[in-house]
Image (cartoon, rainbow over all chains, first blue to last red; front, top):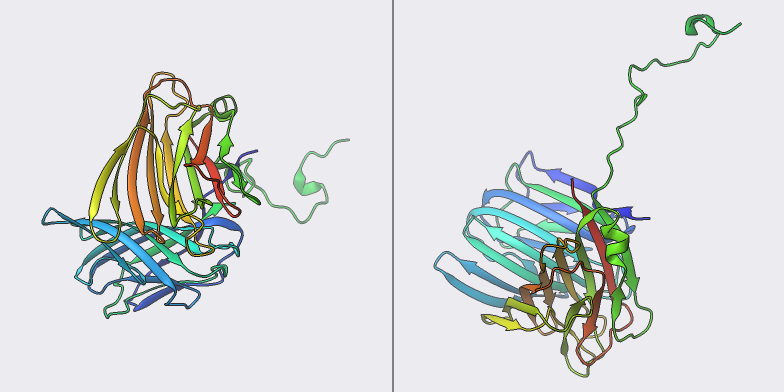
Length: 156
Length: 197
């Protein structure tokens, strides 16, 4: 019998600006986690990390931006492309997030200020199940009022 | 003699409802369902999902989505993995846009590519991932189109890809195959169905 999927797990909508947003005690009952992020215009590059670990991450991204240019780069965190002021929209797929036999791979699509589009993959080099997810602005800035982040569980 | 009024029945603790839902939420059938999952506990040359049209097309699913974490035993840091529809090896075309960490490039192939994934020389426990959308697979008057988002940081590689099988036959099987290699333990492939309204 088919199993309904895409269960809403948690949503945070800011009523005051915040430097970070945390989701904790994440159930291990699902296969993947999908995160939908919608942030009004603000400055500060964004980062996502797991279980309090801001290290042990590799990322590769490609993006196109307003001058009709494209670029690809690697980094050591799950970041967006810029600290500039603008709106931020992202869909993050955290695959096999509760598995204890593999590192955690994230695929994401991201859009900045209706001008930059980005696709990226990241890997948290840990076989520990993900139980918390933090979004923060490590280089300064904050998430403005109205920022909404939702977590969905994809059925196992 | 039967009870005429609830109020005279001697039942003191009751709740009246004007709806047969009796205070419960209306049932909302799901349109996005997990159909099958394959998790490897050993190595295998490929993973196949079969009888898709007779099982899921007949059940009213309109689109399919495959979500996968993949790794092969190819003796290198990475290896390409492809997807086959109904075992077809012709009338296929795939193309993509990818970033390898320094520039953005494009490619095209006469196969349906799922992209680059870690091989046996890659960091232990590292897998690549893919989300594959297969649109209108059970239609008998459309060619089958797929869309892929795939990434692998051990190469590194991030790609947006699409492909088509130029055949209007309904999709009945999907096979995930690494080129000249095997899929390894821990590989997971899940198939989801999306229903039409």
